[in-house]
Image 1 (cartoon, rainbow, N blue to C red):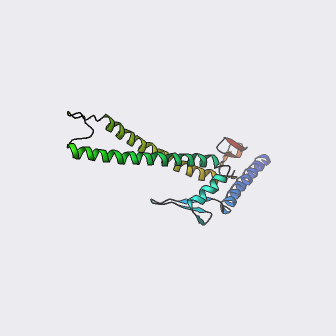
Image 2 (image 1 turned 180 degrees about the vertical axis):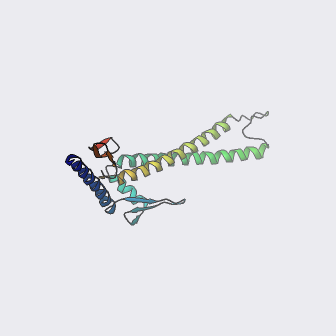
Image 3 (image 1 turned 135 degrees about the vertical axis):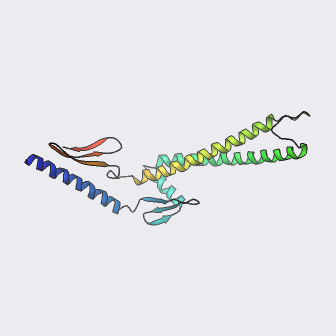
Length: 190
């Protein structure tokens, strides 16, 4: 009976220490980045202080946990801006040429005409413009997703407890706490 009592008290002690450590880390989270999402512009907070997005980017770029994600996010954002600008210019030119061809000949710019108009160049330009716009949009979305993943990685820095899930169980001849993190089982008491 004393062995079961010792195991029970050990399991309860471990459970209480996990809960206390989690509460302590949650209360002292003054360097945690919080995002208030809105349709037009998100608000970023470091602790309780509102920050500009560029300041948050600088903080994330200096942190070792989020540095790789921020480099990838910055690279994707740069390429998306280049591709979206090129796509927008090509789209505007394609629309302009379509309007000019439509006004002058009164026919669709997408179709070959009997008087010698070949629509191949126009069609290739239109498809290329649409492709550039889509690829730029996908890269921009990817950049934003990596930015938010970098925020999550930053918030999980030095926080073993925040990534730890634990179960308290009582069974026949066993009382224990099992802890899991992203890698696997980390703490087992029987």
